[in-house]
Image (cartoon, rainbow, N blue to C red; front, side):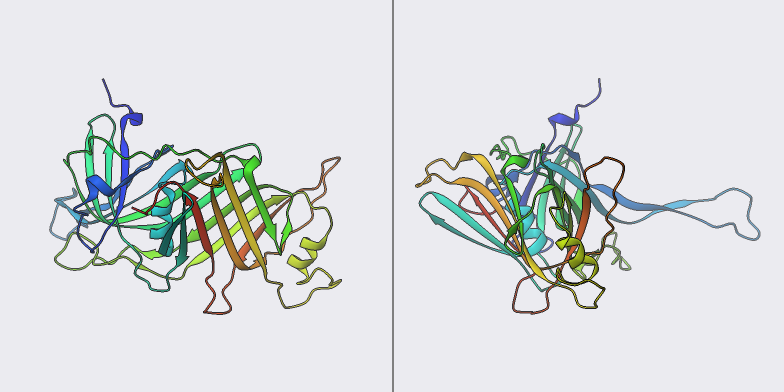
Length: 336
């Protein structure tokens, strides 16, 4: 008979306390539709080495400590997405005006980021898990000009229990999706003719803090944060190349300093937020105040139009300025 993957469900809720599955999970979760993905165990079968005086065969094996990790791939819908963004970056504030809910998500300097309680139903009744102390280790957004805005979230969880009862009526995020025709990118306040983009946030969580006397990690601690990405672009002049390779757009020879400019990625739906006055689109705006371009080569080929993949790295030279800010406008008043 088998089990269909499509009959599963994944639900998220921010924990109010570490090591505790949210008591209000059934009422306050967000259910995210996925393209694929689940959390899997990271666990070793501990087998013995050969012993002098023993036989040629392995004599025993035990199970070691365990954690869970995996990637969720999804079309980026803007009602469930802020829950993952808050877990990835750390802080969020919400405000409502004229029928529009605005959620501003900013990075937290602390190495302890918000934890998620997660419910994962595999297939049509094959198994249902609860996860405790889930963290968003990596977060990725991407889009092409003739495609959808899509995302991938890489999660790590400290604990899992099986045999749970799945939430009967999940609060699905059925909000509109976003396509490339509704995505705009500016660099140094100048619109870029980008054909595609990618954005990556990596919290570099430590995932091996196993301790004697326990099957589970003692904690999950975020290390150095990296914010980076790439653009595929048909250049209209050589300014970006000069800035990336020489340091400034006016330079004619290599220098040592880098130009740091603001990158803004704005994505919106075709649909308006119901009840908004004036009518307002659901949207996500990502602002990164200081971005340096990585050096790249111009690569002409035959009669091809010149295109380049330009990689960039976000910087934070001033501690008082956040490395990035994400503003989401949607129809939900709060973040789960």
